[in-house]
Length: 136
Ligand code: HEC
Image (cartoon, rainbow, N blue to C red; front, side):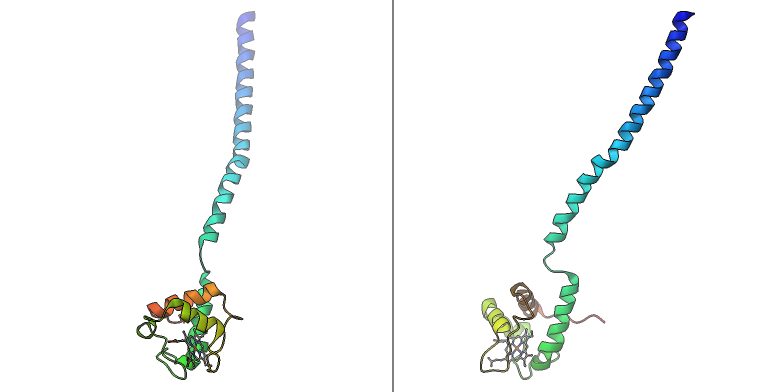
């Protein structure tokens, strides 16, 4: 009789301890999982070269401001055409220099106050491919 009651108490204690351990483990699971997921999102946003909003702004700038001299379809006006056929054989560095520093003695202004070198490079690449149109 004494022996069985001892085992009954023992079993109840084991159950309480097991339940307590389970609660501890599950409550600790949160702080362990969170720090692993947070740092993973940072390098992904840094890998994007230029934001979509900035690209939309640059497309608008080229179509409207550059277009006022180079033609709304970039086929030329006061300034020469900025179409793939006209720019294909011009070295990228020359085009970059003209855009950033302008061409003294001509109407072509410098854009370095408004454009970073990276942004001018992006514009040159788009011009040589065929410049994208503004989306309504
Ligand atoms: C006020 C008028 C004007 C505006 C605005 C203008 N340009 Fe020009 N651009 C010119 C003229 C004029 C030339 C030709 C200069 C020359 O005679 O060498 C030129 C030349 C260029 C050239 C050299 C082309 C070649 O074949 O060598 C590039 C590239 C160019 N512009 C890009 C741009 C871009 C990009 C913008 C807008 C960010 C822009 N231009 C805005 C007038 C303008």
